Length: 156
Image (cartoon, rainbow, N blue to C red; front, top):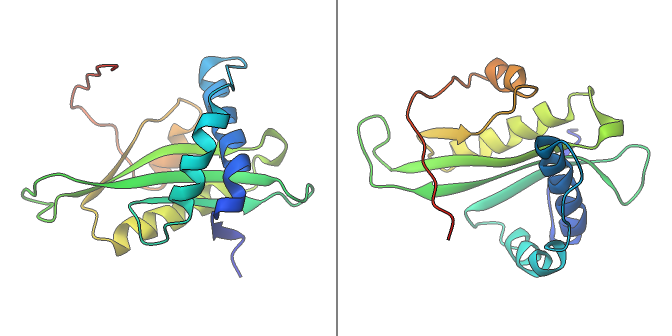
């Protein structure tokens, strides 16, 4: 039996905690957590939609009841189809985090495998993510390659 399970609404607080672990690791220090309270109801609602376009897979912490050890979350988006992706479905992985005291146990890899299977089952043509230098070997071992397309962003 797999350690990985689909996150449920009751996991929302822990999902936010692990997302903050990821954010803090990219920022090299603790960040603002004031946004958690506002985000929590929406996240609970999205976790309650088993057939929606969002999924999070988690591993329960083996030493701390009520805590999660790892999280991988992603969403399925539609773009007009093209050669190689006629359905126009693209998977986006946007949160991968492991609790600092549960690292190096394969939890993130196991969660990624479940999310990738979820994308495959829904017909995604490809999956995109942003990789930190520390995480790049994991993603490369799963078949991800560096993208050469330029990226731009506008904050609203």
